Image (cartoon, rainbow, N blue to C red; front, top):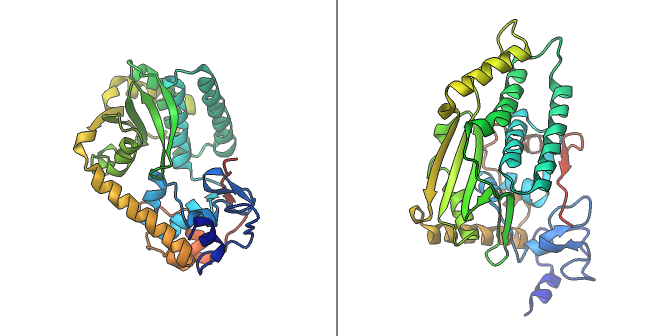
Length: 327
């Protein structure tokens, strides 16, 4: 029996109320498994036979199946994102400017930085009455981004935010920097010690699977400064004090850890990823939302983005929006 015939049978499983099979697999289908409907993200019919996973989606699946469902299939994200990942993204944007070998890319990320800083200052910083904790974190991220180039003298250049897709193995990845057949990933973190060969194994192996000729993966840890704005200290004074500390001990703020392809059992991990892919397809074909069950890791490390939905059973339009699909 052909794949098209199987899709037409509509066996019990997760179904889409907007399903229209006048065009296969669905009239609303967009390439790579997305849906053109504004109230949808992934194409359910496509998911019954295919998958396109990434490091972040697999990590979410391993952490909590329900979290994965809301993130990967429904495409939901918080409208008002927490400050910490927002600042981490800001640092990444700075690094993209410094490392890119493409002037258009540099200009793109420079504009993103400008818009983010404008948003941060309007939202969080009241010059007359600044909130110390938030100001400290915003200034820290900005300072680390601006002076990263001075700290790291020998900057590699290449393709930043480099996206690679392999439909044969159902994996995709976005690499922070791909330069001279080497992979670099940046982490802005307050806990560099939490990153190791074991903790970054999945991410490294996915990169190595996507780029078979690459032998080296370098994790660049940018330490989030622990200094805080002091009482009666203004923003300019704090910025200067922070900058002096960074210049005084640059090795404290940037650490490189390099891993090699030979350190990992790639075939074994590929087998685990294949199992996850097949599990997801089976859950969509034969199950329901309940098959994507909660793992009760709602408060592990930080509060899950989807805690409000699981707690109330309601997807609030005030809190959540759907990620844009790729046309």
